[in-house]
Length: 451
Image (cartoon, one colour):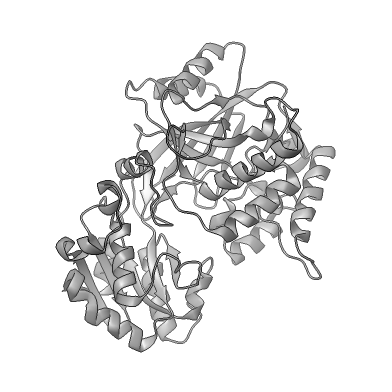
């Protein structure tokens, strides 16, 4: 079974930094170049300087990681951060509107330290997504330089009795210790709940509930695998230390029984050229039934309110037009990997094998710059149109599209049940199979590798 512990977080001191809204940042992996510049300019102590340190003129290899470490040490010394006096859990609430629609939701969970375990049979921590070497190397260098988790992984736990929401509501009854709002107008509130004292029994019960079964990583696979590597290396040099803090990682824990928002991640295929796009389109009838559709219809069909995926439905937009696609499962079946029914039935799996078959865009396509990703169907269509106009199609956070965005494939969101089933089978989905929304803010708290 997994292990979760209270801990003493480092948190911004508002008396030192002022308005806490201005020092928060999104997770590093959703920040594009323009937003990165804006965050750096927003406040000299914005958390992006620690979690996504910028390259500066004259930098040598790894200088930006060393600069982040020096900044972190300085902020600990000058009062920017303070360390909570007692081990605590941190109840976290996000109030938000589902992107593109009018539905409002509230999501509650809690931050704690999750003991690191390798993935595999019998592990208390399960993965569901494949990772790439370059992001893991980036996260490793930052972790090695700073010795702290600047942002959390997100883990899912299942609690059939439904007791956890009531406990979280009880623990969040008092005014929050932190209340901020991000650029997406998501309201974030944080409560510091000490391990002992009036909330102690509720904390103990919450920990028992969350650790009664395995934790499935929903977001942060690169950070988790990096932390495992770092832990193993630290163990080789600190073999005499018992129960070290680097055996744990900062985690946000969410109950899968509560409403969670998973957005689809649409694929934009790049670098096909006119001939490759025509070849792709000619091959579509082999694997899909197609019905012509215009851009407005596609954007409406794959926007909110979202329909859960699993039926093999896709949208396609190229500069020659668009279509609603439905997978011919009998034709795709022989192309699917030898895997569980859960993995073979995913829309992202169907699309991956179809792209490999029809366009030579295989599993390594993202690393090779052949795929770009966006959660917005309108943006996916716009990238294709912009590339046709000779404009820079990449946009913020989609550099891969700079080689020419030729075809946008729109998807429906992966159901939570499918995420859990693939993880329980010990398998991994294609990269960018899920986009859990909203993201946990970076800067709310930091997990130093110390007690």
